[in-house]
Amino acid sequence: MQNALCKLFWFTDPSELDLSADKELIVHQTLALGSLRDIRLLLHLYSRATIRAIFLKGKKGFYDPRAVAFAKELLGIKRLNYSRYIKYVRS
Image (spheres, rainbow, N blue to C red):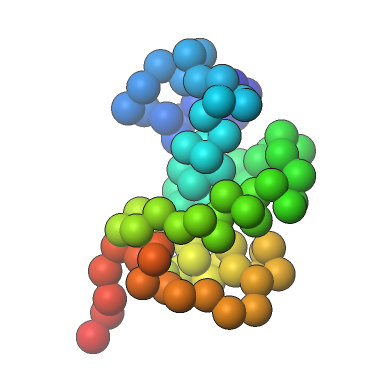
């Protein structure tokens, strides 16, 4: 695991994360909570197609609506069901 991303994995030992086996966790955690610098690093670790495929699987209740909108634009996704991702719905 890259040292720059370690701060996103406070709940586990980042040195034990495997870039291949744990890529879904790494992608979702970085897209949901990472900075622009973290997302740039993510794009160096995995192809945009891989990140897009993982993101499209969804992770209900994990994302803030702004993070979903950003990821949608970043990954060139035209239509997306926000309810598969967001933590809450603002009234």
